[in-house]
Image 1 (tube, rainbow, N blue to C red):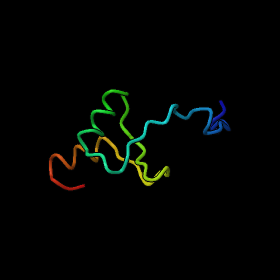
Image 2: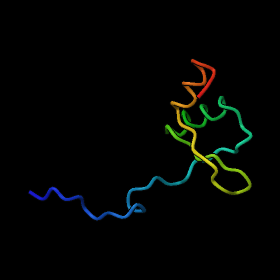
Image 3: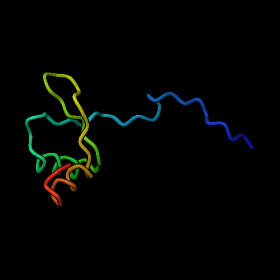
Image 4: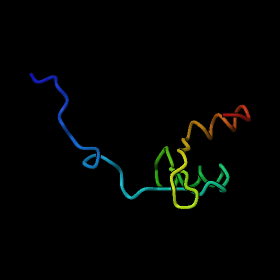
Length: 68
């Protein structure tokens, strides 16, 4: 049995297309987009660049505690 991981390139398993959200959009819109696309993470964009990631957990935590 071969226990070593296969040498698979990231591009072979990545998700496409990229689903993004503008940094000025609110968490309600982010949650709606995640639900629509059946995903748990969105890339956050500003001026055409990725500046972060927002996750469903980030949104849940913000709803429950008011903070991340």
